[in-house]
Image 1: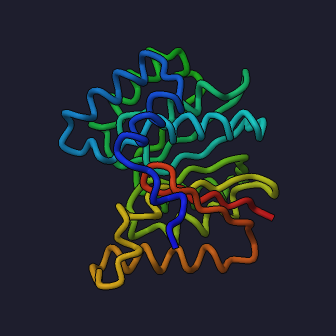
Image 2 (image 1 turned 120 degrees about the vertical axis):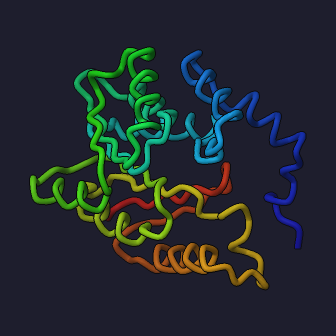
Length: 218
């Protein structure tokens, strides 16, 4: 049976990008730069950024956690949505990529809302737990091999009623290819199986961009 997902033609996808987000100049520049960046595929799409900003506002989130920052698109769009006094903790291993993110935060006027932690995210998450930190929303978009570890930490760090947002869960459509036995695809399928079966959260998988799963902590 043909479903609504099958209707997203390239033309319709372009229409969604044009009408599904309002993009400040600083974010438009980041998106343009990503088209020329060797790792540009790691940047989220504009419509996904718009959704993250909407979720921050709907939750009234004051404390946000980001795992995987790259050049700063997602952190900037969420920081712009934070209320006065709000904070976002960003975890990444790359000083090179996050130096560009720092410039974006400054251009957007949100650098005072961002705390950057350079180092393995699993170590940073452990430190945050040990310090008793809690968050209203967490966004996971980093090393896919460590998704299960990131997710488990976020279940403990995000308050009841808060959201965990997990990117790339459709893995460019490869998760649905029955004959695809790539290790990375198997890992993403396994993670998706774990998440949908986890009774500690309410789950909704969205087909936006490369797939975004929302998990509301009970």
